[in-house]
Image 1 (cartoon, rainbow, N blue to C red):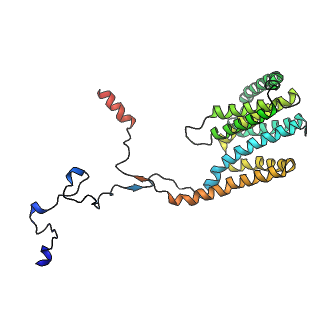
Image 2: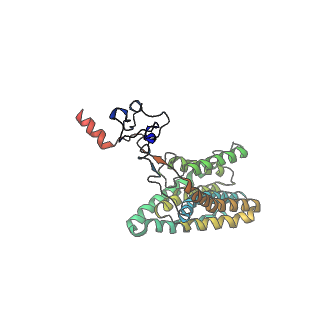
Length: 297
């Protein structure tokens, strides 16, 4: 009897007036409970990591390779400028292999949809672009001639960074802008073209810029494979080794860090994901609900 009268509330033996009301998620209805009371049902609607996808190490490498591929594309274009600027090779020596590679890429891009009529139409477009590019090459060659070389190099570095930041890596985010990415790269090519010795050198550089920053992304967007990265990467390593060993080792370390260390860090940190969801989340109004409300009004 004494154990039942030690201030312990028992709903089975106490009158109804002494029993606490069931706890509810309304503060003004919980006057019978302590301020710091937490009911077991308080977090019954808590959900963690809803719709969260955990990537494997292989998937992370394939995804980051797209970023590394764009870095190598910019590096390859700068190598071409270096070769033309130092007369290490004739412009035609660079132009012919690029035409062959573009032809192979065109065949891969069209695939089974390739036809004679399509080849004729695309050839007309290509010849028109090349003709106008060759005609306006002297103008583009002297367009930024009055600007100092240091300013040209700084501007080119800035616009190439814009190309890298706004490039379409296959993600649906607001930062992606193909127009800004392509225009920034072409503007950088025009800036560098003014540093070359002849208008033909400038024409070849602009053609290379169009191939690398316009045509090549079209191919990778349609049929991207991770091994597309290898030819560009190996060629960049080969030429950088003879241009500057310091730049070569820097490029190699950065590429390996991006392609292997960053994915391993990302995959390791996935275990710490802890996104919580519950009735406190913001309400999402669906479009069909809005249409129904408008129809009623």
